[in-house]
Length: 434
Image (tube, rainbow, N blue to C red; front, side, top):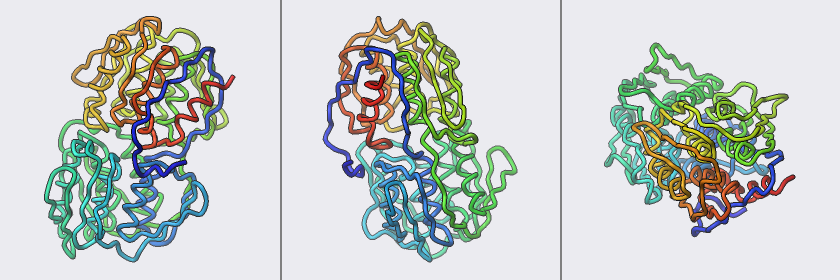
């Protein structure tokens, strides 16, 4: 596998067509969300940790590089197995920390860098300059950090000791703003009393993931109200952990059974998880598929023509591209709601989905907080070259369409390295498996 830290030149990719029903088993790599949280918490812990099931992707390698720049020791023991040696104290990075296009890196690492007195600069891909990060930076200012901008690139000037504790931000654009400040809060001199003020926070299960991982490590997180979190100063206990499979990445493989017919199984499905991707099984049933979990394996079976549905994805907005692609292949009207904030993801996903699904002949329009898709079945769609916008989820959506629409080509498949560098081979194996 090539080093996923750096994007390659765009590689056009003819999407494999499923000429018969799909049947197979796909082992999905580790969760990006859990991996980057686990790496960061291990780097702030009171003792070394060994992490198993660590995802190797562009986002996670950028997190590892950023932690190393702040003084954390990382050793690759085996594929997917990493030892983390936390320093006695983080230090400011000598060179700019590259965030790529990773939301977790550009949001989580600055909150950790606020523990390192001195100046640290953050840079990223050109498209990262439009990804929202201002609420995290506003929070750091309230703690006493001097920040020179409201988006990438930016520089933190951290005093010898942070004086602030009470922080109020608007996290209606991303749950990651809350998670970023909570993950490092136990090491702030006075902890944090964090409040959200604004519209509802999207992808709330990701905050539950953050809080759960903190509590596992001995951090006391109080939540006296729905939009308030209090963390006192104290240690973060080092511990060896196994990262769960990425259930959002699993969704595209399970969705293949819905699009082309057949059955797909994903082993390692956790019985109790905070990953929002678990909700895909409910979506599959809503659109007419059979979905179940038994003995740690999730199974989805396409039972015939898909049908449209009203689907609120506010808690699991990362599923939107896959669900929208299925809706374009379905019969009937699908309305996806609760996802206005994904206009600020790797690209404006609502605009991109409207443009690219329309390009193959689907009837799609944006709404204030989502999409309305009038499905007419795959026979109503036609070949096209679909753009991915350097967005791995857009590539997944186009690959799904290509299963049932001959002649679909992605303009670039390398963007899938963000969370799943082996996606093209994994997809081809599934499609060709009988």
